[in-house]
Image: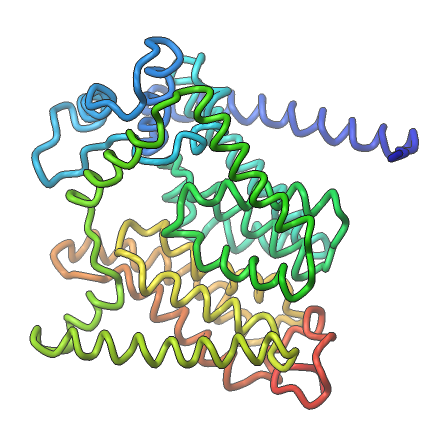
Length: 412
């Protein structure tokens, strides 16, 4: 039987009370600040779908929900080919939003923004207990994250869970059964955004197999079953309706991967397919090699995560800037865990934040120039090259100590 000392119970209670009070205060502050100019376009989609479900006992996947969102956001019905603003996620994506559904929207959105800010800050403190302020310093000003917070997109919560899981399991090597069970359930929820999370989920699966984290694997699959069961109890026909909505979603949201769009800028149309296949095969070969080396303990973890960040973005459809949080994850981990603040640290720390906003400004100054947003990807690529080819400077001893002395990225 689990025993908790009185001092531990008291400390945990105080922390919970403090977080709740902070949440309430931040909600009031955000509402007062926005003064009726309520942001949160993406959050509005989840909010409308949820209220339709609980108040009208109507499908969250209905056209009525999409039309309500269109009229609220666009002030008109969307044209064919435009974003129809429908709810197109598994029903359990809505679970974190449920506490807001009985609030008026002008209170629900500040509540949701406050929740995301506190969840993200808490995840950074949990993942990087020695240097959490570094995480806040570089994450909160990063434009794609700011943009996602303002829109109220679920990617922020997905990003938050990945950070917490990496920090606890990989960087700190916390392997307690309770931690594995909690993280397994949280990682299962990330399946609501497979285009963002699937590369990281594959990594966690391989990591769990290599480290024999049975509780993590079991709770992940149990979590999927529980989420599906809860969704079915709430709305029995959610699964087929979601599939119909998902099929419709692909007709008005661009589906070409970022890599293909980049190649189209440099190669003739008739050769793009060839180069896409060629690069994909090269990527597959390199990926297999580095993962085999990592599995054998001959490759440090940070280059693996950096590779995942790059390719999880390149082979997914281009979307708005908060999708670039995928490759920000390993860079932020390096910035937080790096034992020294040298010139490289400042270049890729402060520089990443400045470049993220510079790209935003350029999109406003030159709105018709395509792919300006990918300047951030280019800057990340520069960091990745330095990480791979200057290992003595970019190595993180704190998380590389388990590797052999002759390892390329291990300790010397």
